[in-house]
Picture 1 (cartoon, rainbow, N blue to C red):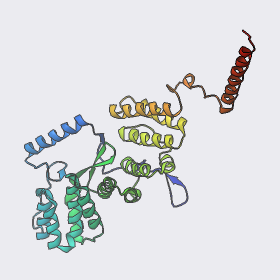
Picture 2 (cartoon, rainbow, N blue to C red):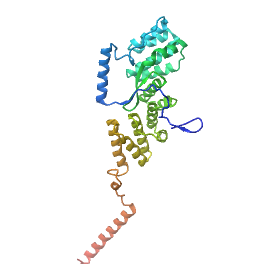
Picture 3 (cartoon, rainbow, N blue to C red):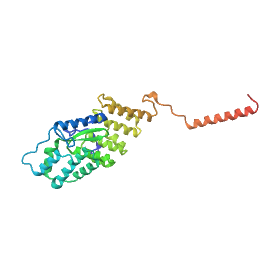
Picture 4 (cartoon, rainbow, N blue to C red):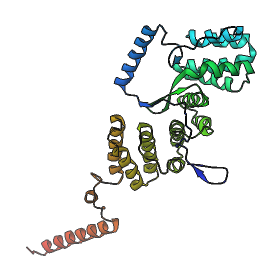
Length: 322
């Protein structure tokens, strides 16, 4: 939860909008990652699109008749190019479109894994004002562009072109570059949603702000894989704070839903084992708690008694006793 304008706390993960830019998120695994890569290549071959281009839902939107030369150049750069340089060149040629060109170039660089260049382009694009024609082009043609953003470790969400796609991609770039504080600032202003909450709590957890993570995720239930991943972050923050009972409750909620991703369930089981070790137990059952070690004072008394008995036995033997 986050503090609202009236001092009340509002959920950061419950999105009340009817339509959101997010598609179904998924957990990346080595096998699934390979399959997705092969599938994208095959899809590109069948549809005639290069997989290195920006991803589009459905067919590429057709350019309207009598479009301006700026719109024609931008359309070709967005939907036909595989390198950010072409978009940058369009931005230099038409300064009123430069901000939009840099943002799209940043998303393309992000898709290729160039986090440093992507962050520079995205930040420059966000700081550059665009004219009305560029804004209208964005509203008409770019709504089908999809960016697959990593919002937490191994958790990816396809996001339609929007404020969320740009800032979530920027936040991931900054996390990869070690600029965690800036990554957190990039997503603080986004509307409430599970993907933005994951990105926000991931950065906060890395900064050691575990109290904030626990506060922001209060009342969260396991309704899908994104919420399960967020519950794992919550449990780890509670464990770091020493609140083992609440951490165990969060892990139980992850394991409650049977259709939760196997990778997330395995992570929850691993965290339960680590939680048991932190509590000095072999398992999490009440009877498995280990006995507390004897106090130092008791050990000292035992040592003194043993020493006195040894001295008494030595004196007794010197006197000829048995």
